[in-house]
Length: 200
Image 1 (tube, rainbow, N blue to C red):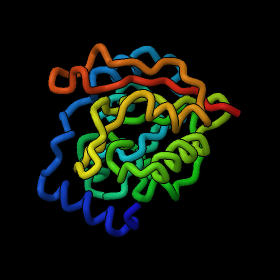
Image 2: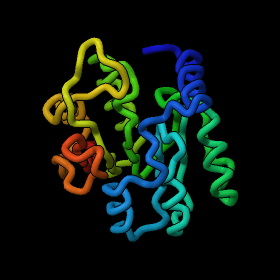
Image 3: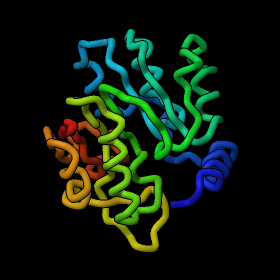
Image 4: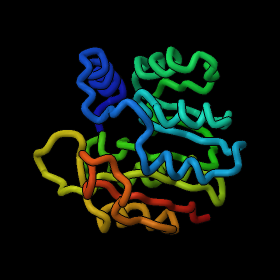
């Protein structure tokens, strides 16, 4: 995995140059629909690699208050603060996900897994870190890209259901992990929606 300084420069440059093709400008439909079913607004939530964090903005507007937004670049965090001035400053976290410490009821996955080099070591470390960050019974919920992993490809790096499960099953019980039926049109057929509960 690249060192965090290189990653910071890489992502900051992309935001500065508006090279953010993944950014749709609003919460993705599958996650929004999931949020609308959540009744406990005291949940402590982490969104790693959150980017402009439209999901965090939406949750905050719905009355969730313990939403923690983590990104290696400060620029998207500043963008969120401009859009949502009342969002708690101390819950905007700039840093490396793999060094982050905390305990959460819910961690949201949205285009983060696909952003780092897809080595088996990196992907296993991701699964282990997600497990570490969740409280007992906590959930990892979100979207994973469903398209072939090309060895010499560029971000976003893909994969398929079986590959993702080969990393996640050691740490999580799979509640659901299926082809997403409510993706936005450009992503139709290319997303898996998953709900995983921490084991142990």
